[in-house]
Amino acid sequence: MPKKLQAKKLAVSFAIWSALFMLILWLLANMGLYISVAEQMAKWHVFFSLSFSGLIAGMIEAAIVSYILVLVFVWIYNSVGEKI
Image 1 (cartoon, rainbow, N blue to C red):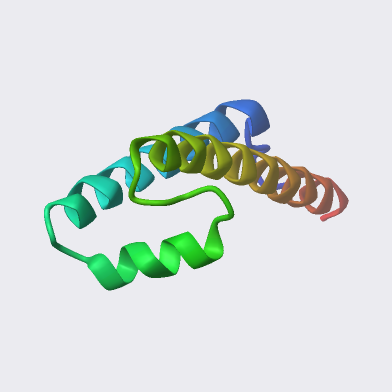
Image 2: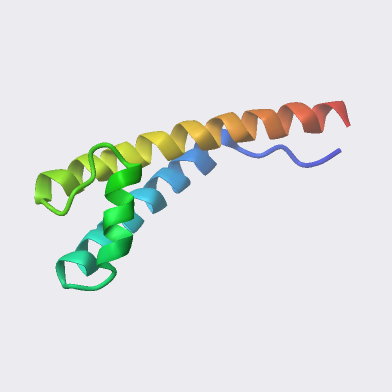
């Protein structure tokens, strides 16, 4: 039987990494690098923009979305693992 993953710890770590990635992308875009990537990120995320408030809102959005998606994924992974 596969080892069960710890859902909350994994989800929190993914949420932190998502927010950090958003911060790094924002910093680089404001320095003139990866502008097209930042524009795509703004299209994918409702609240992200190159303003400071857009950064904060985008980081919160990315953290919440990744937290929920990882929780669901780990729950499915652990449920399927129990049946094997």
